[in-house]
Length: 140
Length: 114
Ligand SMILES: Nc1ncnc2c1ncn2[C@@H]1O[C@H](COP(=O)(O)OP(=O)(O)OP(=O)(O)O)[C@@H](O)[C@H]1O
Ligand SMILES: [Mg+2]
Image 1: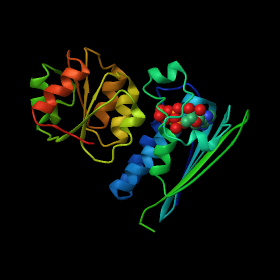
Image 2: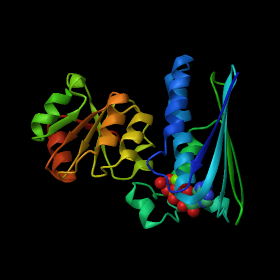
Image 3: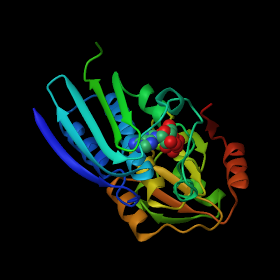
């Protein structure tokens, strides 16, 4: 089993994706199926960018087990008032600065849902958000 | 089609990844929205974009994209080139617009994904 943990700073677009990149390299070394690697890093990358774009700071915990990878992202930020609405494709509150970075289509959370086997999203307005997902290395 | 052919058709300049010009690509996607690009499930797609920042290359890395075309004379930054080299991604800069670039490559035989 492997465990890593990282910090993310809100607004830090130049480092967004560094954790996904590291996880991609690690899973490749472990010979995990390419499709599963891709699903995992796309979901993680979208989640990293969401912290950079919408929160003040965050922590990412990555746990790799023999049969699955479990990733938990916890942030301090504004939180999400209506999670069902946020999960809808096209819903976005992204600032013009975020849009200039190529994000803000309102597709990130739906992408995360499509690329994960198990997903849990909890948020408290004014406190922050916790997004946790699991991908299995073999189809269940 | 080989990446070297895109370069010729687009009067493009290869900024990095010159050793990958023989690589074959059949599908292309044009967008400035990275989450849109991240919905693609096919590997080895050509990305045509006007977004010249590090996130375009990160997106390519996560999506197994090996060639990014920057349209309308946008320049790749050093940061972008460094990451592209690390991830085996060719960056080509072209003076043409997104529309013209897409049209030329479509005519030359590249297929859309959707
Ligand atoms: N970590 C977070 N903290 C606070 N709000 C968030 C967070 N993640 C998502 N949201 C809210 O949910 C909305 C939808 O998120 P989603 O990732 O689907 O789209 P986006 O980030 O706006 O654009 P895209 O992901 O397509 O670039 C965001 O615009 C934002 O309002
Ligand atoms: Mg998002």
